[in-house]
Each structure stands twice: as C-alpha cells, then as structure tokens.
Amino acid sequence: MKALQGKVAVVTGAASGLGRAMALAFAGEGMHVALADVDEANLARVADEVRARGVRAHARRVDVSRGEQLEALAQSTVAELGGAHVVCNNAGVSPLGAVWENTVADWQWTLGVNLWGVIHGVRAFAPRLLAQDEGHFVNTASVAGLISPPGMGAYNVSKHAVVALSESLYHDLAERGSRVGVSVLCPAYVPTAISDSERNRPAELANPRKEKSAEQLAKEAMLRKAVQSGKISAEEVAQAVVAAVKDERFYVLTHARIKPAIRARMEDILEERAPRNPLAL
Ligand SMILES: NC(=O)c1ccc[n+]([C@@H]2O[C@H](COP(=O)([O-])OP(=O)(O)OC[C@H]3O[C@@H](n4cnc5c(N)ncnc54)[C@H](O)[C@@H]3O)[C@@H](O)[C@H]2O)c1
Image 1: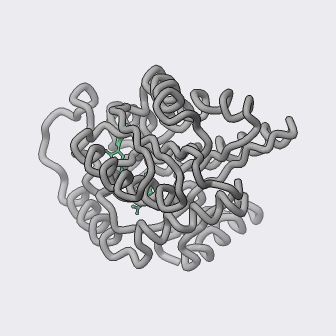
Image 2: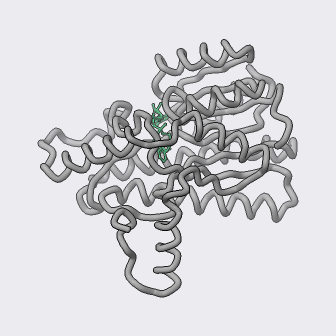
C-alpha cells in the first residue's frame, strides 16, 4: 500500500512498546489510528499522542483473545474513522519456563493473546479489506517464530504459529488475486515492557501463588536484561514496518545479527540433524 495519507491504521497492543510506536509512526504518515489494548489508562495517553500529530484516534478496550471484542473493534473503527486499511495484530505476552513446567493457564494465556489475537484480528478485518480490495495486515511474530530458543516454549509455539498463519494468509490472498498485502514482523530484543507482561494477565488465568524456582528467577532476569539492552528501538522497528507496508515486503527481520541462527535452524532441518541451541551459536 503506497498511499497511506488519510487512510486508517488499526493497532492492537497499542498502549505500550512496539504497538505505541507503530500507532505513532502511522499517525506520522497522516493516517487516522484505531488503538486497542486491555490497558485503558496508557491507551488513552497514546491516543492523545496520536491526536497531537494532527490525525484522528479511536481508542477502545479490547482483549484480543476474545473474538467478539475484535469484531466490535472492526465495527467501531469503521463507524468512528470511516474505514480500516492497515491492521497490525500486535498485542503479545511472554511467559517463560520449560515446556512441561508451564501450566495450562500459561499455555491458554499465551496462545489466547499471541495466536488467537491474530486469528480474531484477521477474521474480523479480512472481509472488509477484501471487499475494498485495499489494505495490509501486519502480524507481530518474533524471531522466536523462526527459531526455538530454550526456556520459552509456549511463546515459541505461539510465534511459529503466527508465522505459519501469515504465510498461509499471504498465499490465500494471492490465490484470489487480491491486492491486500501481508507482512510478518520478526524482531529480536527491543526495549519495551514485554518482560513485565504478567502485569496485564487476567485473574481467571492466574497461576496459583507459589515461590518461583531459582532457575525461573534467573531466566526472568536474563530476559529482562536482554530486552532492555536491545540495540534497535521500538521507533526504528515501527519505521521498518511502515516501509514494509509501502514496499509490500512480507518478512520484516529487523535484527540482521540473528540471521545466522535462522540459517542454522533451516540447515539442521534439511540435514535432518538435531537442532542446535540458537542462543549458543
Ligand atoms: N520487545 C521485544 O523484544 C519483542 C521481540 C519480538 C517480538 N515482540 C512482540 O511484539 C509485540 C508487542 O510487544 P512489546 O514488546 O511492545 O511489549 P509491551 O508489553 O510493551 O506491549 C504489549 C501490549 O500488549 C497489551 N496486551 C497484553 N495482553 C493483551 C490482550 N489480551 N488484549 C489486548 N492487548 C493486550 C499490553 O497491555 C501491552 O500494552 C508482542 O507480540 C511481542 O511478542 C517483542
């Protein structure tokens, strides 16, 4: 989609981090922005930041794991802003733990936000984008959708699924000759609030209170440090997303230094050997 001015961007997880940066970057292109998140206080602040760029904003509390709430977002976006064009399915959470240690609640929460959030976003907006034969989906996966680092299996599973969903969506649209585009965003560490994602976990999916193991605490400290020392800012990632939408680029890999780990995984698959640890390469 080359011409963004005056069109409408929709961003989930817009109250913080990459979502906030994408909302502001699209506003900077002259797009009106619909902002969705469970964190209403910060969402209202970002909506004001969007309006300060001279465009309209529509902020709505949406839990992306709930399909009916995304459908309501699609309807209110069209009612308030007159349409929907660039849809960024971005909300995400990041619990840690070995595959067998994650509770059923951990899996439900992670897949509910990271995977079902994207499924519901595509289902809610695709009919509208197809009907107008104009638009672009940006699905936020992660490099964890292309490699599988240890200690974060639920997150890896959700992000590999988002890559598969996005590739399938791309083929389905192309097969129908649609002009609707797709990008899948696969960043490595970017300084945001992702390592505190428990802050927005719903009470019904809370884990029973118990002491965390020394290993879990060490992993959490490692993730926090890695995220905070990320060298590429949320604003730079958002600019890469804007460029990808304009250039109709599918894979958006913002961190070139991680590519050898992706290549190693592909080679391990093709050579049919056991996977190397991507964090030890
Ligand atoms: N920061 C990184 O290093 C990094 C790397 C790769 C991918 N990502 C992905 O980027 C996306 C954005 O994360 P971020 O880094 O900006 O983190 P962040 O925590 O700063 O922002 C995530 C936002 O999602 C919202 N959210 C959580 N659950 C929600 C729900 N059920 N419904 C609606 N909104 C919900 C949060 O309230 C928050 O505002 C996520 O999908 C994440 O997995 C982040």
